Every structure is written in structure tokens, then in C-alpha cells.
Image (cartoon, one colour):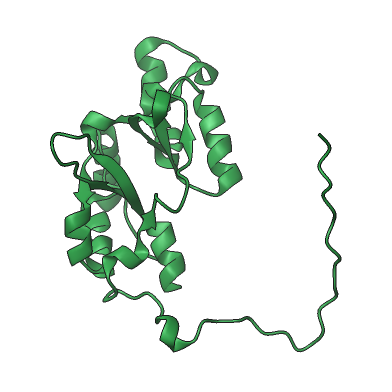
Length: 200
């Protein structure tokens, strides 16, 4: 059946032009003292970006660029999480290390080969987040040397945990209108050596 969609008319702007901002009654800007939950991306309202573990890392990189994100959830059937993959995973040393270990080509590397699996993820609980401030989240990201932190809602009666939210340094930066610097922690011997050599 044909869809009867119509293009809406365009109008030219008339000077002066102002940006509309919510009044103070609708809440102040997010700062370090704001409730942590105010800086969390709530996955019950925002659809998470996902990718198949058998996709290539080139496909994952293209998807991140297309959606202007730096992390994707790696999921199997029925959105069961396998892990996560970040821009740092793709653009860092992981692909080179994997190619050397298995003698493969870059274009053959799949997401599952360099992702961080669920079993290696460290997460925050929603209960702790609800008690924290944005400053606590920033300090958590900095101390862990990660750009992202996942939040889980612990299931009751032996039900599985659900990832219900995510913090990212870039999202917090946008909300605070200032850059939140998070230095990636060296995660292998070569990276540690490189960091030490730069410091001497």
C-alpha cells in the first residue's frame, strides 16, 4: 500500500534568532554536584546501538562513525549481551596483536575477536548510581581509565541482570558544556612500556 507522505514547507529565518532554553524551573544545567542519574543514558528510553559478534571491526567502526558514538553493545539472539566494543578497541593495539597471534588479515577480524566479553566487564549498580553525584561518575571513569561505564539493575528471584543505563565521558561533557578528560589506562605490557617511556 502506497504511503501518502508529504514534504513539509520550509521557511527562512528572520533576524534576530535566539536559541530556546528551558526556564530554571525545569532544572539547572548538569554539574558535578548533580544527581548521577541525570547524566545516565537510560536504555529504557534510548535504544542501544548493537552489533553482531560476527560483524567485521571495519563494519563496527563505520557504524560508530555513522551514529557518532564510541561504543557498541555486542549482542546475540534476543539481545543477549556478548560484550562491548569501543573505538579504542578498534583503533588501538588489539587488532595488531590479534593479527600477530593468529596470522590473519585486518579485514578478517571480527568484533568477537577483540571485544571485551561480558565476563570481563565491570559494572555499576543502579542502586549505587541513584545515591551518587555526577562528580562521583567522573571520578569513577577517571580511576578506571575508561570512557564508558555500564549500569545494571540487579534481577530479583535469580532473574538475570539487565543493563539499564550507560555513562560516557563524551555525553557528560556535552551535558556539562565542558570537556571531561579521561585518560585510557594501559591494559597490556607494551602499552605500559610506552607510557613509561613517554614519562621519562
